[in-house]
Length: 115
Length: 107
Image (cartoon, rainbow over all chains, first blue to last red; front, top):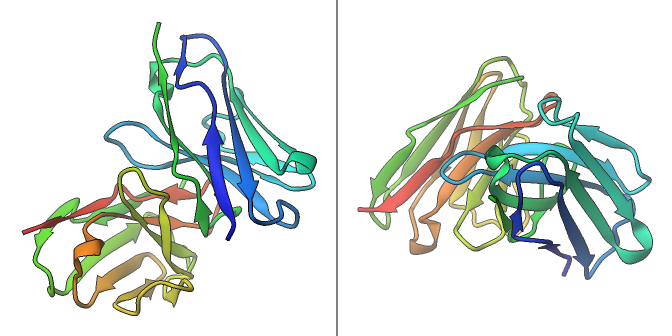
């Protein structure tokens, strides 16, 4: 069955760029929307943004100035870049399938922002 | 942004209990409301979409209801594997927003 797996550094320094990849296995990345969602420790879920397999994107206005989501269909991957991070960006980052409702999720990867 | 408010934030219940979680939106979302189950270390699970439609593979003891601004998730007979945190999410407008979560603990 289709599975999602997040990967990337678990520790990022303040002011640097957080970079994560989500690999889609067992199915096609085409014809779907793909999203990033995060959960700071002890807090609720926050939608970061989505990308369509063709490359069109939409971002949360609260993060829009710092976020880039891209897709590589040939590798069945989509990625997240969040620049100028602060400790407030420490969170469990999930990738998920869907634009505004998410029927498939990765297990999440914890990213800590610390010097 | 549409604010989603869940209640209670936590509850204690026993196996076999009927559990009800409520979610209120700050604006009308018609039936664009989804429910998720989260467990530590596991991929989150979509339970209900469109306020009341059961996602494929989800046990029938889960049900959702409501429309407009007030929604409910009900577990008719709590099972050991249901101890988790539940979140509602509106998909009516961008950005999609989530409730604060309801943690269901063992009594």
